[in-house]
Image (tube, rainbow, N blue to C red; front, side):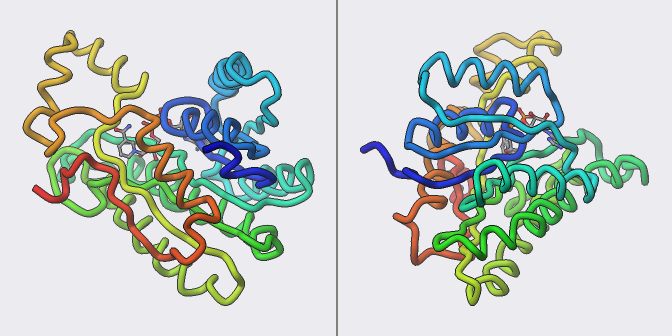
Length: 258
Ligand SMILES: NC(=O)c1ccc[n+]([C@@H]2O[C@H](COP(=O)([O-])OP(=O)(O)OC[C@H]3O[C@@H](n4cnc5c(N)ncnc54)[C@H](O)[C@@H]3O)[C@@H](O)[C@H]2O)c1
């Protein structure tokens, strides 16, 4: 099937690569007009070139912005809406990670991760909402994590922000239903992106070590490909999900069912 997002004007935060870049590619392939938003201009340039190499007529532009700053998030969403004459879909995908036990977490690192993962998501939703309310089919898809639902050690700050995104998804679904805006959330499990590959390589791990991490962690015994997260995001953004709001959708290879 093609054209599942035909005519939709979409903004994807953290669109510079990984899950956001794959979502941008899929949205373009399905006929959307897309603005990729990211802090990292080089990543935006790289991802845009990759997408256009595969789809010459992709309706794709980029905006560089820091979603952790409310003024910048607002500026970027307004610019995207002016450029596309509206916004139908916002994918709140940008995020950062901290690797530390909670007893060692500093006020600075808390501020840092809350500013991007939680406040950045809230700022983008707020800035996009007037345009989403004007759309006949406004939709937000937040990208959370399986660890916003289940526990582990060593990434408690990140996991707390993801649990907060799940909560914010439900609240926004309540508040925006009367304005015709659906708000849902995808919770990926381990998804092998360039970020992970670089991190594992720096730790001297080879592919069998990397595969081993997920072997016992998920029912499906493997990492997700980025496209396997982009497809659930696409579905929730599309009119195929027109009666779905407030959903926290696990895309985790069965991890949360273990
Ligand atoms: N990859 C996984 O295994 C996995 C699992 C669960 C959830 N997630 C979530 O999926 C989303 C995408 O993950 P990914 O693995 O593709 O990550 P990634 O690190 O490859 O991409 C995140 C993007 O967000 C951008 N970004 C960071 N801070 C920003 C800011 N202040 N303003 C604007 N952009 C900013 C980065 O530049 C980067 O391009 C994240 O929210 C992540 O938490 C990923």
